[in-house]
Image 1 (cartoon, rainbow, N blue to C red):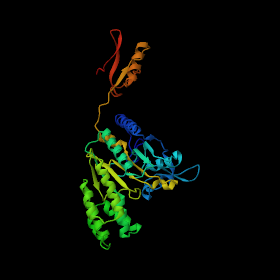
Image 2 (cartoon, helix red, strand yellow):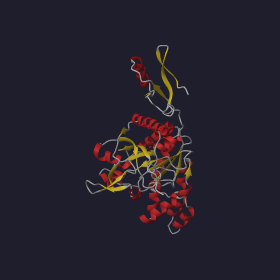
Image 3 (tube, rainbow, N blue to C red):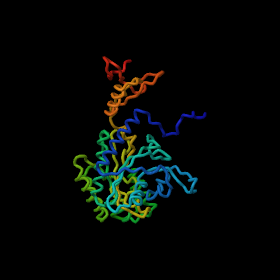
Image 4 (tube, rainbow, N blue to C red):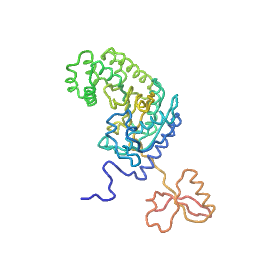
Length: 386
């Protein structure tokens, strides 16, 4: 049976007035907060040439995109599936600053398939990126801004898990893995499949074998990092990664971090610290981020970079459902006093809508809970009668 004309594709949905207002209010709060921290707002285009959108992100990102042929150039274009490569391009070529650059953004991205069974194929992605500083101070700043973002959203029971791709890469080099074997190992560790991991490392020499076997058990609070120094091989890459993780642990006393040294999401993309935020009401990560110094290489400027992004629609749904004041119904009368009152109400943030003639429905359906009436010779706001 044919679908009705009003039906949407699976995992796409309309956002109705109440939810849309809730999302928009949070968007304004977060972008204003980013601005107060020095992050400048940019609006990249929804579509670009494919080779630009996938720069530095790997085949997985390319597979997530809706692609089409540009009728003007004949080149392959795509709808963006992630905004970070676009912001990196802006930093590299349009702004071309030599020092630190802080940028933020908010806009829809489109995925060929949903990332989870409950996710939308059109997330409203909001994020912040910091370019031009390779030190741990930039990672601390970005994590603090993510923490502030989650606090402002009102999401409860938030946990931020932190890992470091440097540990995995150091152990992979020590084990002398091929790119194909490294990919297999990544999938095993992501699935926390310990029996498969034992089989995989059976023919790998020590100490790489013991180090890889230890990774799935290294998760928890900052004490995990102390234990990791004892059980992981004595390698420069291991030491530097653990030093950065310990630095973070010391700087986040007000919101404790948890550490998962086998969480390798986006390992093709990240070059250092990685983090994911979880909320008690959500089964999957609500925010992802980390360091990605190599993404700009395709644009000729491999600048140090770190940042985070999340789905604003998902985040808004996890926060409290704050009451939104209703609108005020105003009569259609040519009165200077009435126009003055309406102007004052709107200046104070009230929604005032004219009472158009011939309205057949209930004004409450339009969002009104009050109206303006002429009482004792003056215009006054009163409750909307049933």
